[in-house]
Each structure stands twice: as C-alpha cells, then as structure tokens.
Image 1 (cartoon, rainbow, N blue to C red):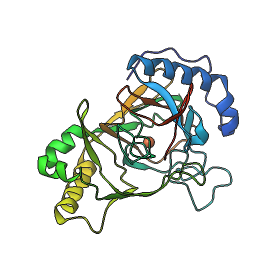
Image 2: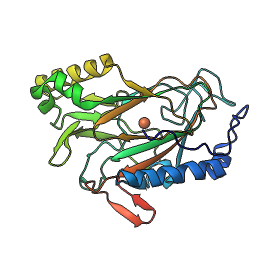
Image 3: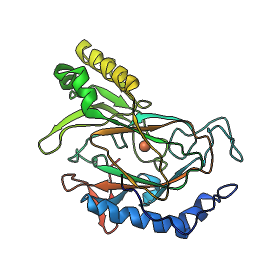
Length: 275
Ligand SMILES: [Fe+2]
C-alpha cells in the first residue's frame, strides 16, 4: 500500500453518486487514475485493459451501480450482476481471465499480474480484504498443491465481460509453477468448481484449499484518496463484504509485469485480447 498521499481537491461525499458515465469523465477520476498509473510503474507494471472486459477501458470504477447492496439503488431489479459493479459481497478471488497466469495459452491472454485500487469515496470505511496464497498452500501441503496444478477445474463466465465475448472455461489448472514467480494461482470462490471427472485426490485437494481459504483471516485495508493498494494477482486473493454505503467508489486499473506475456492488439494504451 502507498499511504500518506494527497487528497484530490474534491472531498465532499455527494448525497448520491452521479451516473457512471459522468463519474468516468470527472476530474477526480482522471486525477486518481493517473496517479495509480504512475504508482504502478514504481512496481514495474504497465497499466493495460482487456478488450473483452470493461468496454476495453483502462480505468474501471468499482461501485454499486447495479444493486445488491444493503441500500437499494434506483431501478434495482431482483436479478443482480455478480461483479464489482454491483453491491453484492464478493468471495475470495483473483481477477479473470482464468485460462493461464503468466504466459498466454493459445488465444487466451494471461490473468492480470496486478490490480491497483484507490477510493474516491469510502464514507463507511468498508475494507478491501486480502488473502495471500503462500500460507494457504503451505497449510494444504505439497501433494494437494501439486493436485491443483492439474487441469481438472472449471470456471463460469464473468458477468462483467463485454456481451458476446469472454467465455466460461473447462479443464484449467488453478495453480501453476513459474520459474520466476514460484507458485501462482487463479481462483474464484463463486466461479470455480472441480470437474466431476477429476481424480479423487484432486477433489480432496480442492476441498482442502477452499476450506483453508474460508478459515483464513484476511488482512483488511480501508481505501481512501490518501492511499493506493497494489494487489499481486498472481499470489493473492481479494474479497469484500456486501456494500453498505452506495457512495463507496473505487478506481481500479490492471497491471502487467515484465514476465506476463499478454496477447496485445494495441501498444499504447496496452490492450490485451483473448478472454
Ligand atoms: Fe476483484
């Protein structure tokens, strides 16, 4: 976490958030997103976007735009998108896509190496929680960890993907060994499952992993304009509780490391393809 940063000059929390398009174009968003882009460079990651996610835009605003929080939003329906654009609690996960972690796999770009988050508003100090993966893998042991490197896991499609692109996946691994990064992970508590056809040992490993994750006490961070959190998406899960105050508004960018081999369609801004 980078802390002790200056506030933007916009401090007052509005009674209600303006529309997403107004917020995306606002000065405070551009200011804080630019700051995050610069800070990302300090960890030698480049800001980028996927063409299948967030409309191909580098900056994503994370807030309750679709309902599902403690407070209702206008025109809330019973069907709520399970993504960071709603107010629902999000269980432990790494960011999609889930096909591979570092090197591209066929037509699929790897998962982002990092996500960088700051808050425009967070009036109730609702935390972002982090679960590092190393103690979880140590707890389940080497045999279970190796079982998670086999391609016996499925994931459902992310609700936030651009309509018509980005797929659900079958027969992927959850853990990969990378020569530079060690064991890296892809996992989502509400999207991953173990294949019915998986060997018993793999099913047991998945069960051991999910139960250790559920029992782990995460580290929590209260985001504000004064701080910025960089999450290493290769080796840490993140999660959040149900949104209590609909004015909680985060700014998120993805970063790719020098090791990550994205399939890029545009060099500046970097756009990766293949969801
Ligand atoms: Fe997330």
